[in-house]
Structures are given as structure tokens and as C-alpha cells.
Amino acid sequence: MTDTVIIAAAAYPLDWFDSFEAYAAKITRWVCDAAGQGATLLVFPEYGAMELASLGGAAVAADLEGALSEVARHQPRVDALLSALAAEHGVYILGASGPVFVGNRPVNRAMFYGPEGMIGFQDKMIMTRFEREEWFVVPGAEGLCVFDTPIGRLGVVICYDSEFPLLSRALVEAGVEILLVPSTTETEAGFTRVRVGSMARALENQCVVVHAPLVGEAKWCVGVEENNGRASIYGPPDRGWPANGILAEGGFNQPGWVFASVSRAQIAQTRADGVVLNMTHWAEQADRLSTPVKVIAQVKP
Image 1 (spheres, one colour):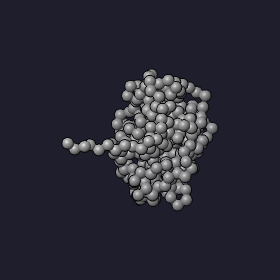
Image 2: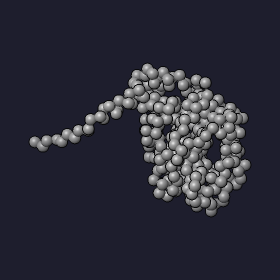
Image 3: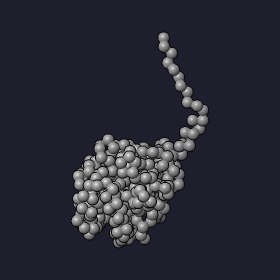
Image 4: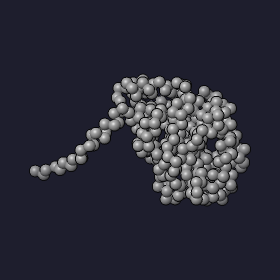
């Protein structure tokens, strides 16, 4: 097992393509760039696959159902491409998530690839209002996954999922050391919600969290016309870590990779003997809530 993991988080812009080959060339450049700088774990954002809607033409990309179906149609070719790139460079890649139809409606699925090929996938668990009320994207039915790899135990909480602590907690209790958070947020407020949630997950679980967002405009693609964020990698604000919990971050809406070198031994040491022991003390919450919450009314003079 590897102790030191060099992580690359993508702040990824969407582009228009006239052919799948042009898309493949872009992804190849991005992977080569990160691997060339020593990264062993690459994380692409939520709904980064939506740029494949351009392959259906302008009318398809502007139509919700048309765009979802067009993107899903190309998933097998994307799997082959990223499996080959992961094998060529000896890296692990969380691919950009996108719609995959399971029955009549799509899930929001992120595929995970390694040097030996596709390892598995993680579906988003909790849908935002936009997904459930307009896109009619459905939650994944297969639950949470732990990816046990030579670079550590990894888990994925897609965007909104990072704002719900029990999902990440279940992964951490199953041994996860590094949480991957691909995201898509239209506004700075939305980005901040995912950022705050991700930093809180790093704090309470004493782990590393990798935040990879979409950035920039794609006016031609329905649902992802405007995207705001910055790529960041967070850790627990504890002994031996940055005081603000930020291991690395890019500029706001600045496309490109952000890198951080992470020691799995340091994660284990912090969990065992940190200044605070949030992970260990988590169970005490239930004990403290064993008696009813008291409501104390102020007595008016």
C-alpha cells in the first residue's frame, strides 16, 4: 500500500465538440497534465460529462431530455477512454459524473477507474431541488461504495451529498481515508454550501476531502449554463495540518488542476492522537441525546 498520495482536483470548464475524438483529445490532455506533475489520484467534477451533449447538435444540447440521453449514449466510449488513460499512466481517476439511465430515469453517476480498468461507480444519493423537480434524476439504488485501492480507501459524496454528514460518516466507519466531492454549482452561494460541507466532513471525520467543481459558462448546454467554484483539497485543522484546513486551492473560476500531497499515515496519526478526536468522539453524541432536549422559557419580569 502507498502512504503518500498526490491528489489532483480539477476546476473543469465545459467545451463544445463536433466529434468524440475532439472530446477524447481534451480529456487526454487533462490526464496527461496531471499525471505528468506526479498525481496518482485525479478527480473530475459533477456533470462534467454534460459537454458530450454537444455531439448531438445545438438543438439536442438545449433540450433537457435530449441532452441527458445524448450524454448517456456516450458512456461506454468514455469508460473505454478513461480506462485506457488510467492504465497508460498508472493512475486512479474519478471521471466526471453524468446521467446514466437505470430504467426510465437517469441517475447521476461517477465512474472510478484504475490501472487495471474500471473499478466501479458511485451514484448520487440525495437529489437537489433542480435534479428532482426539473431533471427528474433519481437517487442511486445501490448505496454507498468504498473503493479499496493501493493508494488508500476512497469514498465519493457527489456535491449535495457532501452536505449530509451521515453519508460521509458511513463511509468513514467503513474505513475511508479520502473523500472525493465532485460538484456543480450555479452560484457562489451553492459553491460555498459544498465547500463548507466538505470542510466540515474533513473536520469531523479527520480525513482529506477533495473538492472538484465545474467552472465557467456553457450557455449552449441546458442545466449547466453557468458554473462557479474553485478546486480545493481540505484536511482537518489539527496538528501538522494547515491551520485553516485548506491543503490547496485554486483561484475562483480558474480552470486547471490543484495539487496536494497527502500522507495516509498522517491521517491515521491525527485520528489516533490529534489535538481533538472528533472521529472517536462521534459516538458520544448519541449518549448526550439520550435524555430529551429541554425547553427553557424566559420568565418575564
